[in-house]
Image (cartoon, rainbow, N blue to C red):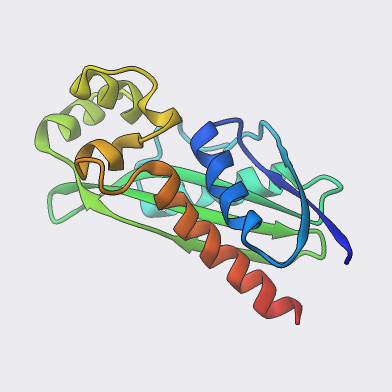
Length: 172
């Protein structure tokens, strides 16, 4: 079996765990490396387009000599006057193919949305909201807002499955 060299474009434990847990269940031999890769978008993406672009940029910036790289990005967007949490992923392959997918989206409480509109990033806002620290490293905003039913790793795992599913479909 050919060993695939892959990169996750992040040092964030929730993102690394999301990718490694999906890859562990594949019938592939994958050597996964965590790479610090820039999103080249705002620290707090404020639209679906910017969040998707951040994921694409992370994957592309991490690709290097790997067979593929996965970038994951969380952001927010406004719809009908309500601010929603969103997340996107991208898989960039060394042969030039690019796959994208989005995941869970839920409305943010007004008090969180108001702080985001002042320019504060979601991570620190959620730490303050939940009176915890490092929320983005594990349960994420989604974990706080769903009472623990879905954590950030699970949310991103779903996106990773969508990405790898597309990649495998087009590799056969």
